[in-house]
Image (cartoon, rainbow, N blue to C red):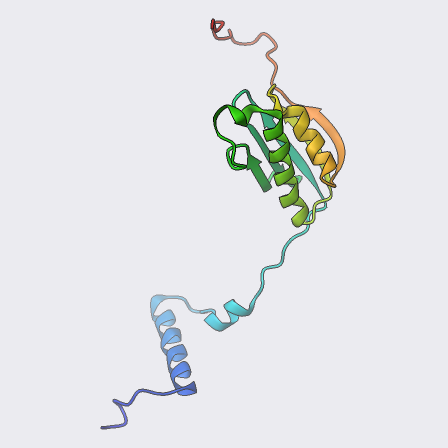
Length: 162
């Protein structure tokens, strides 16, 4: 067997693979390839955001809670369906409590300890969700009701008769 047909072993194999990958990167147009070994050793830094906004949407069919930073980027969210409730049980106050606790737990894990609460809708989980966030260990600075209310703009839909 000649020298050219023998496969390199150990460190030689790793060096040969790296050289081949670099050559391919240059051929493909990536002038500055990042070595794979360096990319694996870098760890992601977890950003801690001390204050944020908790958006609670309590409709007749579901309760949804999402916690965002000041710019509106979602950090944690939960809904009654995600918490394991199905059908008419998603509308209950207990489902609202569970949803808010789950969402607050996720946000606390990311370093948040103060939140402004904005509640939208008229569902049953509305009040209990606010209480759950407050009791989860987060400081509630403001509670706002942001339910959209018509000021006699467009004509409303016809009244639903049940």
